[in-house]
Length: 431
Image (cartoon, rainbow, N blue to C red; front, side, top):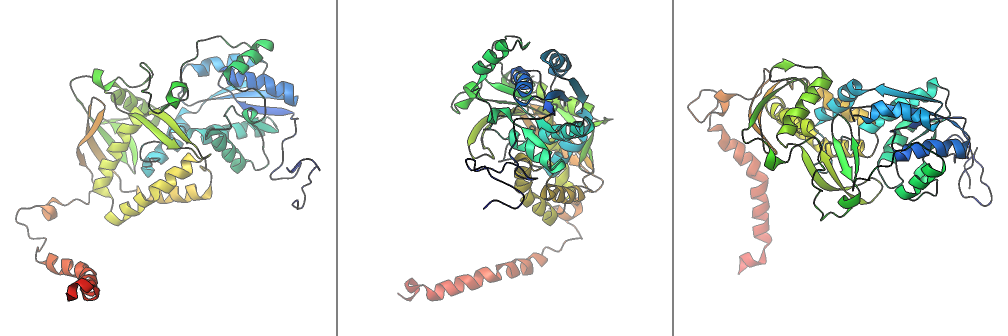
């Protein structure tokens, strides 16, 4: 039975209208498109105009991906956009997305620092804001129907604007791949330069670069030579190690080698230092939210350096039980971010806890970068819980070693009782 307020056509099992679950009709007046300037989104821009009869506003978020931002605005106008916006979001990206995740210590499935996962909610936020300002009735993206990004874009959009319409061309049109998109572009005189396709796809921001698809789809294949962009091959890295110091305040990195830096230049500096020494490459087979396994390569030089430096300062400053509770929460937090629930109440609640835990995380870590590795050399903090006078093996007057006898016996009590009970019930004990 259809829900109240929603009707179904006899031949169609899907709701045709209503506030939630509404099926998108092939009409829209004005659409905000997440636009990169590449083949896919250039084709999408024209396809939306042709299929939906809509005006298209192109939106390009500058989160440190590089040269494509400068070109995207002009390309969008040439392709027929009503208007084009290229907005520098790098500071917001680092301050409000990179740093909160670093404070949490999150890793997805033990390796992935989530660089793409938390970039999509930022882009979606500004797309929705632009749609509100321009009185647009829909937003659109170029994510495929197999990946995580479609989920991240759309969950974020719905969380911020519950009545928003979403156009997802890769789930709607009959174009099957790059060759079909090239033919479509030629037929519609879309100004997309003809370039030799890389044997993999790449997505970059200031925090990381991700590589997937093409030759990487076979998990036995080694990444092709020359793929990595931000890190030198560890074998070619300098023979002399680089010692670097990272200072934190309330869990956020604020200085490198004693120089205080704003968030963006700090991450850029960390990227440069770690990248020069081959630090930050990860090659994993991960579990996508949509249910399939996917091979991905991630290059996160600065993030890797900051991650290890942060953990070093935490070792001094966080109470054992508080740290254990936070660490138990990390897999859930990481999965929540990975799955696209950045604006969900559970992520926000976990973030509140994570940030509260980080209040005493002040101090400096000293690390060595050498041929792809990061090694902690030392750490110091004004909030250190470490007491050398307590832990020393030399003579002291603050710890009575005899106290450990009762402590151990109390903790062993349940083990002794269990063994005694087992011994009494074991037939082998009776011969």
